[in-house]
Each structure stands twice: as C-alpha cells, then as structure tokens.
Image 1: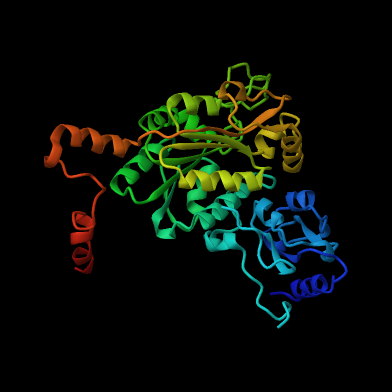
Image 2: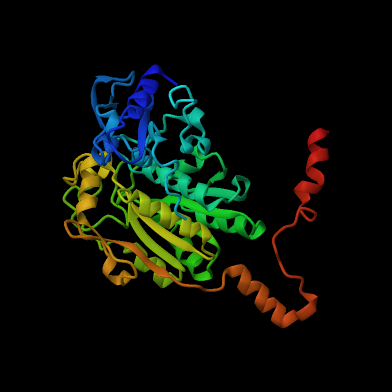
Length: 99
Length: 305
C-alpha cells in the first residue's frame, strides 16, 4: 500500500494519549466520485474534501485528523464507490461482529 | 511487528465485487453503492458459502448490481426478476436467491410478479431499492413517485396516489417486511442478515437518494443533503402498522422492521399437500438433484466433443 497510508497508520499508532480503538482510513482516490458521504458521516471528523482532483475531475477525501480515527469502517459502509474503508490498527482487535 | 510494515487488509467489499468493472455506472451521490456495501457485509455475516448465493436483478440502475457482484448472478428482462428467481429457487432450493432490483422494475413492470411471489411465499429475498423514479430512463414518474413531485413526465407535479410498498408486501403475504434508508447502514446490514436467515419471501425496501434525476428536481439537493434529510426525517418504529408507512414529502419517514411472521413456503406447501394425497407414492421434492440434472450428466462429454 502507498506511503501515505503507512504514514497515516503510523500516526494513528502514535496517538497514545487517546483511549479506545485506533484505526486508519484507506482511500483509493482514483475511484472516488466526490459525493462526500464519508466526510459528512465520519463520527470522528477524520476526513475533509481535498482541494485537489483525481483524474476524472472529482474532489476526493483526504485525512485531516488521523489520530482521531477509530477504524469503525463507517466510511467503508457509506462509500457508494468502494473507494474508502477503515481498518483497525490498535485498541480493540476486531470490530464487534454482531449477528 | 508494527502495523506500518504489515500488509494493509483489503476492503471486504472488493472480495465480493467484480473490481475489473469499477468504477461503476452509478452517479455521484447515489445510494445504491451504499446498499451494496451493506449487502456484502450481510452475506459475510450470514456465513452462507458464496457458491450457494444467487443474485437476480431486473433492469434499471439497481439492476446493475447483479453485474457487479461476484457471486452467481442473473440480469433478467425488465420486471421479470421474480419469475426468473422463482425458477432458480424451485430447481435449486439449496440456493439462497436474492432479488436485488429497483422500484420501477419490481413494483411497476414487475408488480404482478411481486404480489404473486409474496402470495405463494416463494423463498426469495427481495431487496427493493426505492428512489421514487425511473432513474435509468431519465427520471419519469413511476408508481412510487409521491404526489406533488416534479419529474420529466410530470413537469407540473404528479398527482397520482403512490404505492405504499410495506403495506403492499404485507397484504400480499410477505413474511418479513422492513424499510430502511441508505443512511441507516448498520440497521440495514442487520436487516439484510435477518432476511438471509428467514425462510419465505422477505421484502426489504431501501429508500435511496437519486440526486441526478429526482432530488435535483424536488429541492432535495445533493446526495449528502438527501441523506441528511433521511437522518432528520426518519423515525424508527418496529412493528408499526404498515398502513401508516406511506411516504409523504416533507413528513417523517417510518423505518424499521414492520412484519416478521412464519408461514409455510411454496415448496413446503407443495410437499405437504402431495404427501397427504399420494402418501408413499410421492417422493418428497428437494430440487433437481445432480444425478437427475441432464446438464450434469451429459454436459461434460458434449463440451469435450
């Protein structure tokens, strides 16, 4: 995966002062159509719309507060273009797997 | 080993999708992709093996789901998703057959099939994406378009009474009826997992934004604005009377699990009736077995020749 993701994972690991699970969003900017669901519905306000464009001319999300990410994967649930998902990097091992 | 050196886990959705077909054809702000996320996670949770799942779609924007999902899938003619799925289910009752289609396909052109599928209680999982319009053909008024809405065929506002889908499904005989919006992703995933477990015809209505063809003309704004509107307007009311679940623009949207009953399915009823009349002479029907399937018997040799 890209260096950008790895640096985001690293910064989420360094977020020792915050309790609870830690995570990181993984963004495939090229697939994004800029609907903004992930930015709007992220419960920790990790994302914002980037000022730059992808090759199709859409603004894509970018990480603004990587330390706040809990890896809840709600961005992954909302993204209609399968262009973003959350992974858990620390704290609780796995998300609650409700049946 | 720190996480930074570890391989990043893949997106669970990508395992179940034909990623070579991405990006898909749905517009920016469309909610169908969100429902596909929930659907894939529900399949993952239900632990049904992938070769036992078949997704059947009709025509329309939602009809494209069958093309994007990497399970057995069937893209059928307009409105006939339920008849195709019925045949599939009766030939192979061990399959979990999901009909994933839109309101124009299931309710308008395929309305007759929906009510009779529900009446006969064929073991199908109906997922009906309701975006209030015929989106793929350019935003014409359909049977789910609420009165007063502007559409290409109703430029001064529609006036026809629209279908109340949960009420229609319940009165036709569906055993599980629920409605969620694409905003309620966790509840939607849970409802889809419940549908996959349930025996009989389940009906799940999902209200999704169509910013390009419906929202734009009806002052709903972008996809995000519509989703925010769903968040504010929806009221969760499990077990609510489906008569009250009609959607009126500007009023609250009732969501929740409305009906959850048990009723013998079509195949159960068939086997029971035949057994009662024919007794021992009737071997219980459990689908076309691999021995009796002509394709399995002769198919391989013929292909080799």
